[in-house]
Image (cartoon, rainbow, N blue to C red; front, side, top):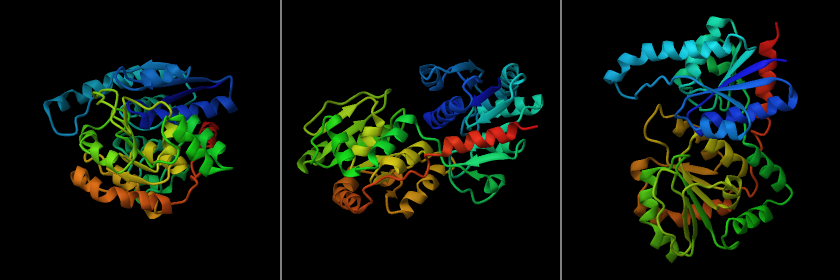
Length: 358
């Protein structure tokens, strides 16, 4: 029986692919022990126990995006986090990392302990933690082709899909038109009215929310249905006509299927799930970071299934003048989804099995 440690906490973009790989690993190796590393502030505290996997918390290494006095604490926080990670990793057989704050100390602890490391990079531009880990391992996988650096030669695995998204793709293949209409009805909307689905990531987006809330009258005047996921930390505005705001959408597969146009951030997981089930998207990348969200959407734009604008361009006036064009482009887009990522978890499991061989 082997012990596998999965490091990928913080946001859904790190946790969901790790969970998909864990589920696939259990199918192939039902008797193995799987341990997730996380911190007390990440979504893994909810998602991992809900999936019935073991979670071990380590201290978070806080690194602000801009220089500050807090940077003086980074070496001490990192040492503490590495030592705590090492207690778990020293007796395991392999570490699979997915990036984020949890991964960096896990990679260092694995290198110190002589434990093989496998790394999956979800974004088209690798993050700092995975770039660090790549110095310790040649067992690399990516969701998108990377143009330079060590990840340029990584296994192109795709991004592991959540089980509900993968199942929805398989169930819809025989009749995508019916699947999309039925999904609208399940969400409580009229099957024939165009549906706009707005999401700003797992925590929501204040900037996107403000634009949408000021556009409700326009949506209603044009007879559009709107499903607006405002985020669990944000106040839910009142429903109005065809406008239905919610704190969070549990039936995400239905939302992807039902929407004629999706408006949201272009995180790696969002792009992958949209690729599998969505029709057409307007992406408004997060304006901070290393620009990975612009790159994540590039292949979808090239396939005429999405377009990208900067956040400063995304206004109520922009929506009013472009919504008809977005719906027309959706009607011209392929009716079916794309199953390119369906085998991603299996590919990462296979790479991990190879990394574990003596």
